[in-house]
Image (cartoon, rainbow, N blue to C red; front, side):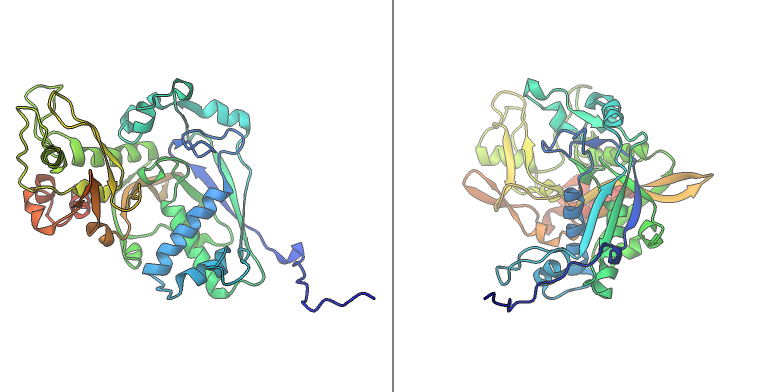
Length: 399
């Protein structure tokens, strides 16, 4: 005799109950990596739905914490996006269905792969390619944006609530404005724009500084131009100059090919800590042993040149090995003009106050990233309104 099951077996929703919505996406800056190997483009699957899903969860968490102020974040995330909830149940499936369709052909991807050396104005963000030591991986190749398009299709399961659906649409809008694909996406590589969203046109709408402030973020934009690659190059130059350029991030050198000393305190801090320095480079920076550029993300490799100088030092957070940068630089769609998209040069700063209180480890000891009292001792910060390093950079970026 067969026993009747005591637990009801859920019935799958018929396919007709699932309504798919399409976002048409266009790559606007070169994409770096994004495949199984972080620095390689996957020719068969250059755009991965798993990567997009991870980004959407990240943007959702930002909004949930800082705008919607959801109290039980983990539970709410698991209920919408799926996963385990601290072992309290058997796991949940996502209420958001995603698929990538209409990918470029393999031949199109191959035709668009070019050496990193084709982008000399992006050298600052392509340092992994320039510093590659494995001959089998040289040269790193980037996927140029010309004609690279795809569709992101999304749908909701019947169990999604109206509030959850609204959250996903807003999350997709943030992703469409500030997301990126592949390696170094926070510095504008792999940027794209959503050119069409028939069912939810608000996803394509440009977020303003006032909009992002509601999520405790800051946005600074420069005037729109038609070329997104030039927009990205402009943004990257701003960051590189703030951190390293003569008369901005460092003193002018006595010779053209030999820059002067950094105006930031980290090199002299390492000289003090390691008790090593060239006879002409005795530590003298008045800010002392602090590491303010860590606010822009870790790790940072400090390379010294000259006899008696400290050994190369990889600066890492005291806890963990990496610290994601709260700064996103990229071109952002602004408007259509004469039938062509225009892009603003944008700098978005995510909530970062917790980073200012963090420390970095050098040797066996921990040192502060930031001390507010030292702002006036660091010229790139003092010359740009004071405050902390990110506030000073935003001031410089806007100039």
